[in-house]
Image (cartoon, rainbow, N blue to C red; front, side, top):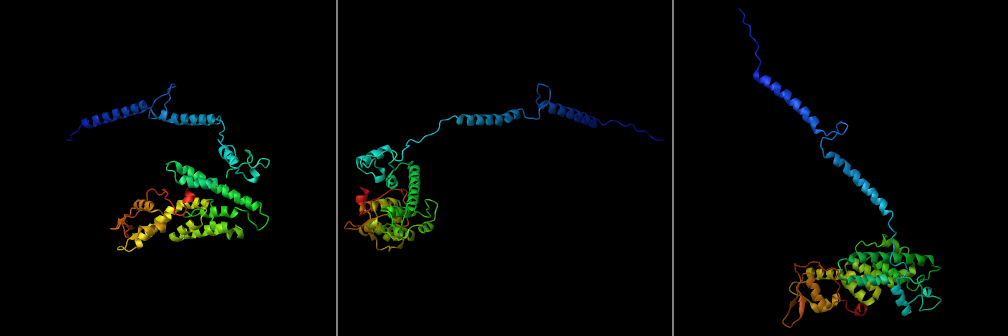
Length: 338
């Protein structure tokens, strides 16, 4: 006799199904509830309520930027504070000192000029270069850069005027001097003030200028500096440099002196310190300035029983001076510095 079995529902299965159904219904309700609705009952595409605000912010920013552009177009035009080719103060001083070139004189009067005739002296920037070296203001670097930029531009313009008005192989009175300034501006490592190679520039310079004493001096100084011949560099500068040439060379003198101290310290004999009097003549410095400079380079002096100071070699504390822009005196050039 076959027994029939009645299928009994599984309690756990029933509860699981019921739980799944309710969970699905709950998920769908929560899904639709999480979506914010608009006034017409349609769902937005943002699940995050803050997403709409993030979408609106870039639009506001672009509108503000456009408004700023519109406002800037209404700003007044900027004008320089010195509309003349020569500042008024310099022009007045040059009138008083009769320091006017022929073409700057009004009706030939050596004591009278005008704003249309007077120009800044092409030497003003060279002397400014010298003055800026002694300034300790931290913000002076930007002024130094602008002055150097104006100097190179003025020299380039001057050379073009020389070439445009050249009628023969003769040269003007100060032409060689200004060409020497351009060469000396290349003393820095890989320095090209106008972006032009110095070797290519030499090919365009007339032969009489190349052979002039000013250019010969500048080329020797350039060669000594790049070779590291500090002795010939300093001696030639002291013997032949003009004041304006010295103004351009001055920033590199401390670099050459630092090289000299490094060579003497590393190449000297440890048991024979270098006398301070000899070192003073070699570096063209006063002994008091030399002691200060050696201290800035991390080197110590020794004093014998008589009181003579000397520099011991093989010191391991040598370093580049932190105040690299500090300027020390230069023997035989005190009149220039005054």
